[in-house]
Amino acid sequence: MRILGIETSCDDTGVAIYDDIDGLIFNKVINQSKIHSRYGGVVPELAARQHNKNITLLLQDALKKVRYNSKYNLDAIAYTAGPGLISSLIVGATIASSLAFSINVPIILVNHMEAHLLSYMLNRKSINFPKFPFLGLLVSGGHTQLIISENKGEYKILGNTLDDSVGDTIDKIAQLLGINYPGGKNLSELAKQGTSGKFVFPRPMIHHKGFNFSFSGLKTYVTRIIKKHNDYSLLFRADIAKEFEETIVDTLLIKCKKALKLKKIKRLIIAGGVSANHLLRYKFKKMMSTIQNHELFLADINFCTDNAAMIALTGMLRFKGGNFLEPKIVIKPSWIISDLCKF
Image 1 (tube, rainbow, N blue to C red):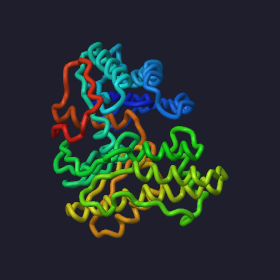
Image 2 (spheres, helix red, strand yellow; image 1 turned 90 degrees about the horizontal axis):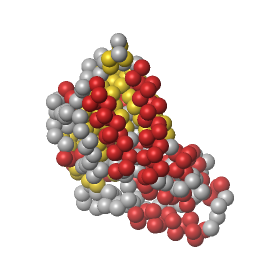
Image 3 (cartoon, rainbow, N blue to C red; image 1 turned 90 degrees about the vertical axis):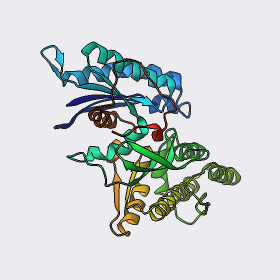
Image 4 (cartoon, rainbow, N blue to C red; image 1 turned 60 degrees about the vertical axis):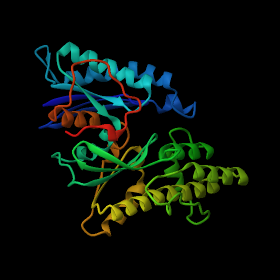
């Protein structure tokens, strides 16, 4: 079985082909960061234009891999139907539906966050879910969520951000420190040059009941310190970046440790663009290694950010579970992971 996946939820254009025997046989992503960096964030109209341009090039390369005697050896087309930017989602949905119609195969609507959650499977030779139940931490530019899954494709939201996502908070502080969009990776590099303990930032909501997050207060606190000192030296910016990164990671770690203990869960998946952060990966691996019989699942760093490989993989799992449609254009910009059905 072969599934072609299309990813256009934000500003990365991706096309991939996943085979249930051979694994990933094609995967390419065209990133638009250079285009949007001058504006300090993603401009939806520009993103959509670039998707239209890029996806044609990627599909030409991908379809060469599966064309035999003027026919395409594909069982279905999977695409990101949501959540995401409306103008970006429409591009992927239109292309996917048109291609599916032309080669007479069904479409599969993929939830972008579920795809992130399952992307750790791309590291492995065989597709295996963790033993249920498992805890999932979704951390990206648009989401900060703790979820519990007790069955394939079924998710309950345990905690959510009450305001800013962790990814958006990182980008905003990075911008104040003079780091171009997207700020996450470069802020982390700057933090390596900083010294721990030069500043102390509050870890938000770690003593609150429940599992929700809040990063707006932290963002305001750090912003005030940066403006108060009015110091743009490398050492100052590095020290701020160091403490800020440690604060973010500590907050996420404390919340997850609490959830694992109170919910008596032994398996944790961390996914989304922020899960590529080296400090986060190090601290979570260290924490999970100290808890007996607990397992941590992380995607390869190359699959943490938006890509079509995770869309094709998730599409295949959904397809095998009977979750597919006749070709038509469907997008769900605010699609919540807890609204999904099992497969």
